[in-house]
Image 1 (cartoon, rainbow, N blue to C red):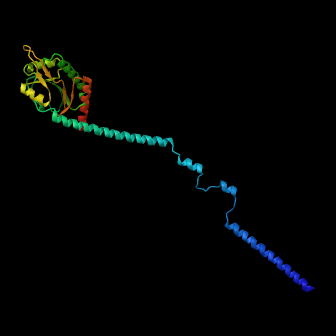
Image 2: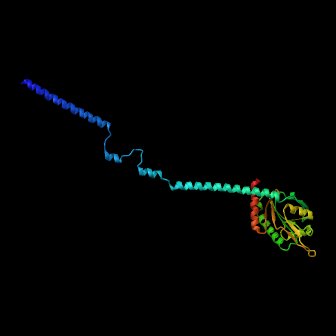
Image 3: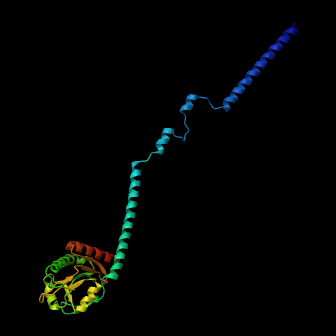
Length: 276
C-alpha cells in the first residue's frame, strides 16, 4: 500500500513540475516578444508624426508661401534693371547719331574763309576759334525774309547771353552778305546795328563770298535787274559752329528763337561735357 501511495505522489509531483515548466516557458516567450515587437496602438499611430516632419497640408502651405514683399522687391529689381538697360541703349544710340552727324557735318559743311568785317578789318575762320558761331547768310536790300531772320537771330543772342555764365565759350552771331557788289562794310555796319549791337557783319569780294558759300553749301543767285535794283535769291539757313570750328547743326525758318536757343544750349552742354 505504501508503495502505491509513493507512486501516486511521484506522478502528482511530476505533473505539477511539468505545468510549472510549461507556464515558465510561456511567460518567458511572452516577455521576449513584448521586448522585440513595437507596441500596437492604432489610435496613437494615426495621430503620431515624426519630430522633423510636417503634415501634408503644412507642406503645401510652406511650398507656396511667397509674401507680397518678396514679389514687390523682385518686380522692382526687374524694372530697375530694364530701365538701366534702356538708358544705356538710348545713350549708345544718341552717341552714335551724334558721331555720325558730326562726321557728315565735317565733310559736307564748313571750311576756311577770309573776309572783311563791318569795321573794315580782315578776318578769317581761325579768328573765331574758341567761340560758338551762329552764321546767317543774307543781304541788306532783302525786303522781308532777312529782317525776320535777323530779328530772330537777335532774340536768340539775347537769350543765350543771359545764360553765358553757364558756358565756358562765348556766343557770336554773324551776318554774311551774299551781295558783295552793293553791301560795302559801311552799309553792312549800318544794317546790323538796327538789330543787335552784338552782331558781326562780314563781306568781301565776290570770289571771297562765293568761296565761303561753297564751303557752307549756301545757294545764292542774283536776280534780274530793274534799274539799279535787284533781288538775290539765297538759302535761308542759320549754321551753328562749335569752338573748334566744326559744323554742329543748322536751323531753318520753321524754328523759332526759343527752339533754336534751346537746341544750341544742348549742344553747348554736350560740348562742355565731352571737352572737360
